[in-house]
Length: 127
Image 1 (cartoon, helix red, strand yellow):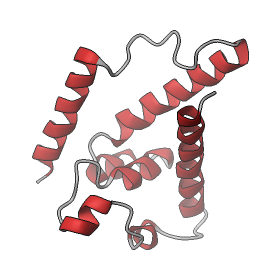
Image 2 (image 1 turned 90 degrees about the vertical axis):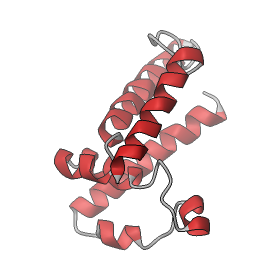
Image 3 (image 1 turned 135 degrees about the vertical axis):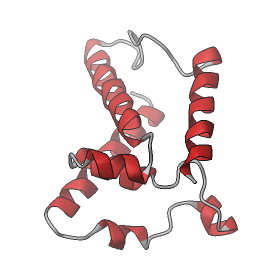
Image 4 (image 1 turned 135 degrees about the horizontal axis):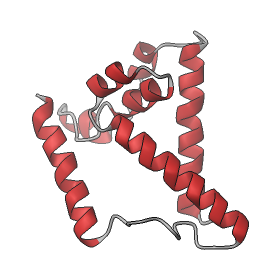
């Protein structure tokens, strides 16, 4: 497993831990929202296309799907794709295969362009 995959797995685990922490009442999403994570928004005051994704992922982990969609429309699809990619990759790593082997697509070329358009469309519709 490479550095990128290791970081992706650690980030997924961190989001899951944040979801567990909010579920246990250790802190709230409002508390987490006070920690500036988006450098673009901190520098410009304008939310970027990914703003709200962290909250959307945490809410999706907690099963609060309507609130997740409200935080960011792409939160649930991102969490699903991320989870499938990691599960597939961990299985491949156990079998000595390339991490992303066996997935039906990669976000390069046309699928990458479509993904970028979906992100831009979701950003434009956020209002």
